[in-house]
Length: 278
Image (cartoon, rainbow, N blue to C red; front, top):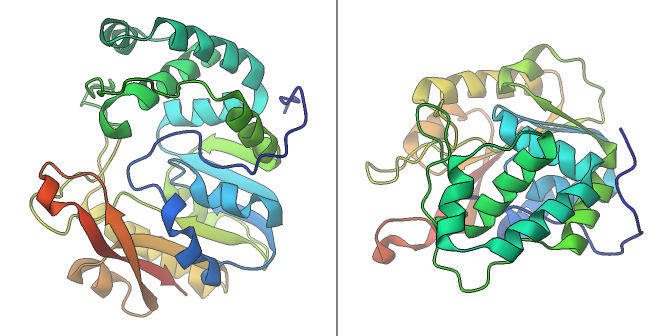
């Protein structure tokens, strides 16, 4: 790992991406279930990273991963090349317009930093901050209607970079953890794409691969295997009969969350989710 932060920052680290289902507003409800101290923190569905950034001060080491290689690349660039990334984002901020958005969406960056800046730029300017890929793995969300989107926030990125210095960041599926060696003070948090609670809430993945009921069942098996080792494990998901049955042998905690993404405004509002612990 290379040193990425050019100047110290006292800003508390927090997510630098907008992310559907991000946990930033739920952390106060999650806090009673977090360990006071963690040796190595594992998170295989990284997304916006709100839980990692919240826990970073009590974690000695982290292993962060996702199945989406472009998302993994973003986190690596924030960790290792944050100043170059900031320069690219300032250029995107300078030229931003709907036409520019679609030009950037259509082209791929050549270097890792260019690709990372492209993803952050699209994330900050697309509709609802929704990351979605088509079957070819191409980002396909339309431009959002923002008057002055915050495309480049150097202080936020530098604070995230400082927190990420303790992290290994890898592309891997969640099953990778089933055979991983753990220590007793390790902690694993799973935040998979949620199981749909109705036919109109079927957004179950942000990559071309999706996340099916069979994937949920395999994830429950991994969760149970890690819990059987005495490991600290926690998982978030929708509050529905299918998920309750999958985790019926564990502690199920109702969490009150705001549903921000729905095609009908009348269906947005507060809804129960589940936080599952061993």
